[in-house]
Structure formats: C-alpha cells, structure tokens
Length: 338
Ligand code: SF4
Image (tube, rainbow, N blue to C red):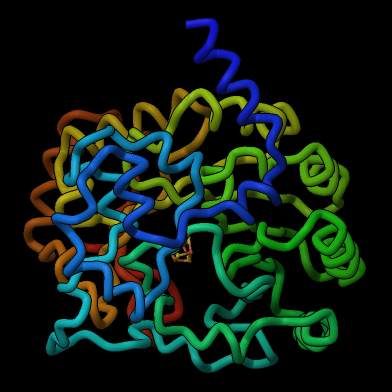
C-alpha cells in the first residue's frame, strides 16, 4: 500500500505539459497498458487514420485492467465501424464552419464561442468535432486579437466561452493575457471554460490558472466533460479543490453514449459522484450525428426512457437536462420527456 501511495504522489508531481508530451498515440500500447492482448484487435487500428488516437496516461490509469468493454477504454479505442458511412450523419452536424472571425463562433446572441486552442489532450472517438478543420482554425495571438475586436464591437455579447479543442491546452501565461484583454471589454460579464483536460490530466489545474480565474473581474465558471463515474477519482477531487475554494462554480456535461453510460444506474451514480466532488450535473447531450461513430448512438425514445428511470432514482437537483443541439437553433433544444 505505501508503494501505491508513493506512485500516486510521484504521478501528481509530473507537470501537465510532461503528461501531454507523453500521451499514448499507439492503440497497441494503449491495450497493452490495460493488460489486453492487442493482437486480437489489430483490424481496428486503421481507424486511427480517420481520427488519431490520443490518450493521456492518467486517464488510462482509471481503466479496468483486462476489460475490452471498459467504459473509459471504449471512449478512446479506434474501431473499424468508424469506416461505415451512415445516412443522416454528417461531418459537421452542428454546422460550426461559420466562424465570424478566425476561431470565433457567434451561434447565440449573447454568447460567443472562442476556439482558444485547436486540439485536445484526449481524442474521444465520438467527438462531434472530429472532422472540424482545426488546422484552418488553429488561432494565433493575432487571430485572438481579431476575435477580441469582434467581441468589443458587439455590445450584445455578455459572455465569452473558451472552447476548442480544449482551451486549457493554452498555457497559463497565454490564458492570463487573453483573460486580461476580455476584462478590458466592459460589456463582458462572464467567462466560461469548457474543458475535459482536468479529467484526463488533473495536474492541469495549476495554481497560476486558479489565480487567473480567482482574481478576474469576470465571473468565471468551468464546465467539465465527464461521461462515466469511473472518470472521477481522488486525483481529480484534489485537483478541483483549489477551484472550489476559490468559489469558481463547476458544472458537468455528459454525452449519452451507447455501451458507455446508457443506463439509469450509471447515470445516477455519475450524478451522485459529481455532486460529492463539488460539480453540478448540468447537461446530458444527445449524441451529435457525426459521420463514422453511429455505433455510439442512443435512439431518442431509448434516451427518454433512461432519463425517466434516472429521475425516479435521483433528487431533481442532481438531474442533468437532456438536450440536443440542432444546427442553426439559437439554443440547445430540451428533449420532451413525455
Ligand atoms: S475533449 Fe471534447 S472536443 Fe476534445 S475530443 Fe473529447 S469530446 Fe472532442
């Protein structure tokens, strides 16, 4: 036991940048790390040509060893099903190609979504942005400046949402600069950060990041992306503690995924665990119909049944809202549960 504690302590001393440089990109290595015979799954590996494999090691540590159906492994394991072309699925289901400035999407009247950084620490196979042309929208500081000018000129905007990719892929100094620029735009009241990075590399919650958010005049919130209770462990709790102490509200959004969390017991366990960790369940997203990942789809009626079952287990304040994003709609569309 003392040896395990020492190993965990040592891991927490690895910087987030080192973890990032050390992500697993080879599916064979991924399977070997979770004690699965990779030779049985070689036929699936070519799906990495469609979307590269990227899995940080702290995320792999949370997987159940020897289980090919582990719910965390299934989120990152390439499958040859990804080559199937399915009617009704597209490469840009939310039509996010309409940027108003490089890396800036203005889908909602009062909010803008700023692609602070292209790319993520982890590549989730179901990602609705897996075909997004990140290389054309990878913003530089000059692009950020163009986006800031747009935000300053549009006084109806009161909230900036940092997105990506994952915005926490930007380093703390760059984030500090960006937050300061946004603070100088008087009509912006709130800053929201959508990120999965603390879940997959908990060391990303640095003191410098907490200080930037804590000392800002903007009301900062963080929306995490956690799909399964096994993604929450003591390392994540420890990483989030300084944000909670700094009174930065933490929310969670999940995606309803077949074979991963399409079950009332799993969803209720997730909400309970989120709340124990100081995170408020917020949205449960219907899957976005992105080409190549139809095998994750949960039909709408099945989703409604699962959510109704979950509501019978959980108190109302732990129920995330079941929603779907529809291209061109001004906000997320709640799913009618009756
Ligand atoms: S973290 Fe989010 S944006 Fe990045 S690959 Fe996963 S689902 Fe997509």
